[in-house]
Amino acid sequence: MATSSHGFAGPADLHLHSNHSDGTESPAEVVAQAHAHGVRTLALTDHDRSTGWGEAGDAAVALGMTFIPGMELSAKHEWRSVHVLGYLFDPQDEALRAETDRIRGDRIGRAERIVRNIGRDYDLHWDDVVAQTTLDATVGRPHIADALVARGIVRDRTEAFEGILHPREGYYEPHYAPDPITAVRLITEAGGVAIIAHPVTAGRDRMMPVPFIERLIDAGLGGFEIEHRENTESGKRMLREIAAKHDLIVTGSSDYHGTGKPNRPGENTTAEEMVARLLAHGTGTAPRVP
Ligand code: AMP
Ligand code: FE
Ligand code: FE
Ligand code: ZN
Image (cartoon, rainbow, N blue to C red; front, top):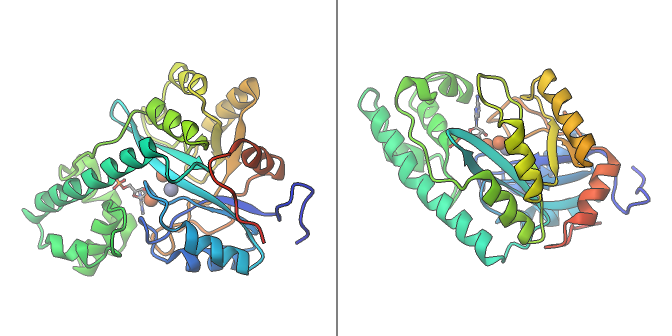
């Protein structure tokens, strides 16, 4: 693939997870999978941490790919979980580091509480979850799902999320997360670009109200992840209008989690012009180019 006039190479997938959070593969394996699927520009966006950047960046450059450092920051609006993708921020930024440390720390106790709840009805213990977690990974329900699979209680992550891990089943516990305005500000003030991940997934009341989205834009929001398999068609149309009105960045990505989800690298991609805008606005850290 030829290098574009912007200095990066084509098909761009800007949302992939490794085993530094809830993906099933190492950062280098994620990069190799993305390359095998035709992706030539990628961002690693593990939940609440940036420890995979070095390995992923090295692997990407070795394969002639462009690497964009990223993260998916957990946030919460009222009861809704909101994921804010941050790109090209300074990983040493004190305020952002303190917040991600706090989120990851609270996620551990929360996962233990969920496991304790499940343990009342099923043969599941905290050790089972630890066994599914790579050293120091951001712990989430996917690791509990893997432990349920290992115990033979469910077949796969999907079955776990549709059953035992679904809040309606009564085992769920929330974890600490900042409100989305704080999340956008933290990323932006660290020199990064903030993009709301999968903003319009199906389900009643899952979308943030438009006036609140406009407050996020005022707080420095860079754009929306529009092409994502979980966004609804009507939601995408609405977001495209808001993005056009405010001249925001729109992205498309896979949200690859290795074998943890059916999503394949490159199943959605981001337009070259939008990658160029991301690179122009993100000043906290440099992309890695071959
Ligand atoms: P948590 O942040 O611990 O509540 O877990 C949410 C994470 O679980 C998300 O980041 C998704 O990657 C993952 N997830 C959500 N639904 C599913 C599903 N049906 N199958 C596999 N993973 C899922
Ligand atoms: Fe995830
Ligand atoms: Fe997400
Ligand atoms: Zn994700």
